[in-house]
Image (cartoon, rainbow, N blue to C red; front, side, top):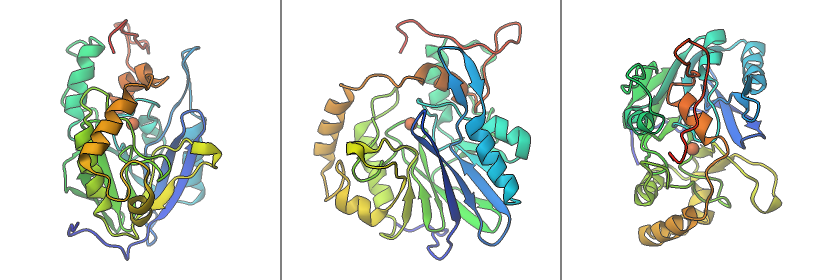
Length: 294
Ligand SMILES: [Fe+2]
């Protein structure tokens, strides 16, 4: 694939922060030629049973950015996560930066605004975010020009972010031995996911790919970086030219066996608000559980 901003000579410095509670990897992406950086897919800690929220994971990222004297310009959400809560507003409050997500957040907000029976004060126009990306859009991190690919299928708002020779796929792909993410959430679609994965695999073979999740299949150590070439050759769901038809059949059958993610109910309510915790009529932070609503 070609995009005017594709630049394999640009090599951002990428540091991953693994969250063992949700198997999420958050990233700090640094411009090699300036103090500018971005944070991708941060995590806020929650003890759901206790309704307690803490910030150890986000604090580690903040400490890293401060220790390296970096300037945070962007907080990127690859999509509305259903398995962890975003810490973007918390980090933004400490370090600044703009929060960006795919423009189809409005579709996700509409769907889950209904599921959670949100009132009219819950805006479904994406206005909780500082930037809404469309396919092909570019943005700057210091001297680096990043661009985005709309890669729906897992969710309607999924975006893949390409920054020099580093690409952040969100849940579009897992490591080669992990395959792909589920496509059965509202607005998900296995065929669309296949098409989106093909767009990622059309990037140069030596493009570095960074995962949002890893579960260490078959007992291997947690890993989060691979390449387009490795995925094309070895991905267990889409590698070696797997067909769209076979992928849809496999993905649909597999998804029918999967339980809901443990944190889907709090995650959606927080993440569709760009990471803000909803409040009740008196202004107290409060989460809902829609009974038989998902
Ligand atoms: Fe996800």
